[in-house]
Length: 337
Image 1 (cartoon, rainbow, N blue to C red):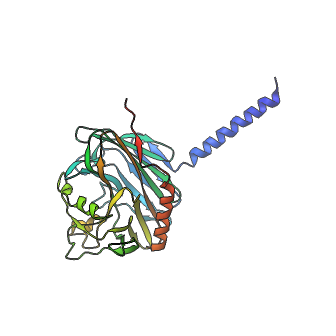
Image 2 (cartoon, rainbow, N blue to C red):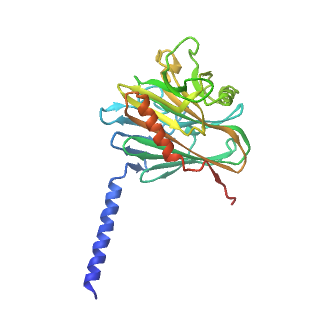
């Protein structure tokens, strides 16, 4: 027996085990199968994604993020203990089509696939929603929650849309980026949203173009639960909206090819005004005609950090996101069984 070779083999095996152990110990998240909860901890943010649909039965149930903390200051980001606690910080809300409503993903059971850097939720097709939807949440250093989405439609759906929603803790104030000029080249301009008579008690949305504005008002949002009307603002300058508090910003962004409108609630009387009390951001994704057998893919990102509402920093973060996703195809082939 060649003892030198045996010794080398043992050392190599030990090295593999040590590397494997270190990789597991450095994982940004951990899964609790009994509670159906994923705890995540990055350098700057930590929190819990709860996927147990039986824990909070009734109209308020949903998969949701809670106990989300900005670690450098201990600031609470998620709306824990508030009216939107059941919805949590981040979830996928409505599935809509031209003039119609299909469902709310956040109240449907999903197949769960936890991993070392995040978790995938898959909603299989139903009679009401003849589309398979898969979303993967990935936690990335130091402060990023990425959302990759795959959609496979089994029926023809005109103006198909999925609405991403985000809700923040008290004290956060919203902002969006609109085009400086309504026509011509798009130059982003940051604006803050404040209650005023023209938009009072309706939901401000900023479309990509006139076609997007038409989708927002085609009657789709007066179907299903929670009827609401949109105040159509200027076209967006970037598909990015944010909330800020004491210099800390929570930014929500998506691909410009796929986000047809951005929504954000205004600052106002949070006790008596339901719109102001939501403290919410929205991305209206797709809004296009989907054909049976079509596969679509897109990405969204939330970033939480101390950026002081700086427009240049926001643009830099957005450009970094675009660079990360630019090489990814937006469609894929569905192979029949």
